[in-house]
Image (cartoon, rainbow, N blue to C red; front, side, top):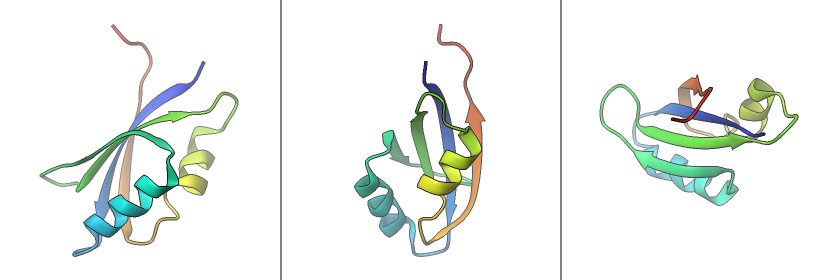
Length: 79
């Protein structure tokens, strides 16, 4: 069973649209939104079965240039 995570991304000033485009081209996300507030982007991502959550996020997402900070929320059960 895959693990669903929500990741909020803060981008360096002026890079949000480029970061979003780079993430979209990787085709690893389920949904990607621009948001207001402390973070610039919100990503819904399914971690593949057997993959380490932190390593997968670091290796597949956080290597995108322009990401300044992230906040990951793990999910446990859908109602």
